[in-house]
Image (cartoon, rainbow, N blue to C red; front, side):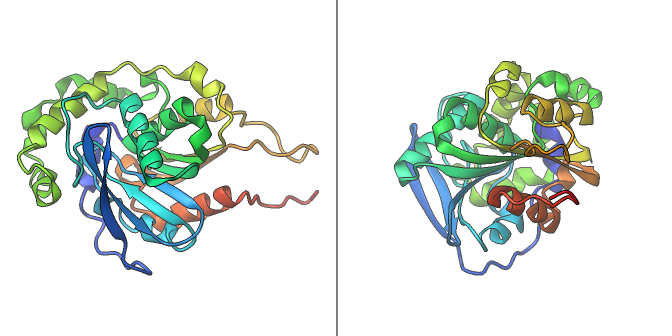
Length: 287
């Protein structure tokens, strides 16, 4: 999952994408804000949630790839992209409740969810707080506890400043889509505070019944040990070929992949996501 600063180098570099059909954008009132979203493709509903400082375009080619077989609802979260900001902190529970309210407004009873970075933590909270709305969750670059971040990132959080982010290239890119072009400093303040919010969801995760595909880079912002611990909390990590079904949740580790490189590998991501959503598993020699 992205925890703010690490996303900087990857934003707005995904390049042009070729969709099979042009997405249709719209806005809907959600919890006091005007939320922008785009719909593309046909099939079962799949909600896509971006990372911090990101928007729909910066998610790159994975959205049109998923739209080949799903009806994709790509959202722009509070203060991001074309969605307005409100006088409220950005927290993962708040973001999750926004997604739930969006689903109600859009008439979506239940959907699969794919989240990256901040969006994956929001997706995890959506499954915790509104389990009836989530069929399956794909959580890329996620953590369930702040202790799961790499030591280098935990050391960096206290050094974050608004001025640091104002000097980054995506600060200017923000203005091109933003509902409030001058709102970037306020967004940065909220996202820095998000890094400092308590995050200890082990009991909630262990109680989840929602199948989760955990996707992580082997050089991601969460440690590999933390991703494995998350997988075990969800019932994973057991031996197959013993005559019992595999756990419903899965773990995928992308090789030679940093946090910001996770979202830039749409073909590899899709190769993990699509079989998971379809419930397909590789066949062993005893099957």
